Length: 130
Ligand SMILES: [Zn+2]
Image: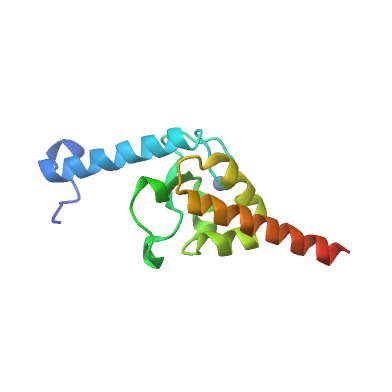
């Protein structure tokens, strides 16, 4: 795609403008579905602070599909990076707990996996404390 640095939204070609609009609509829908929060740390987000996160990263075979999209704050998105969700939740069970609570519209298999990762992580913590 060839765009000059000075091209504003109004001078984008119709096709590109449609892509931008679709992306904004997806972010708005994700923000609504996630209760206007970062699904990992539960921070309140709005359309300026929200970033879209692919729960299973695109680089790891995840789909660009509403069932794999959540809103996250910038710091959580960078922390998660290209980690698979269950590796991330095993390392940061607090993020998994919030995910189970706030990521209401993701695929059920993702929520099931998150619940399992969180309970395993807490069970391990109990063993280490005993
Ligand atoms: Zn966050």
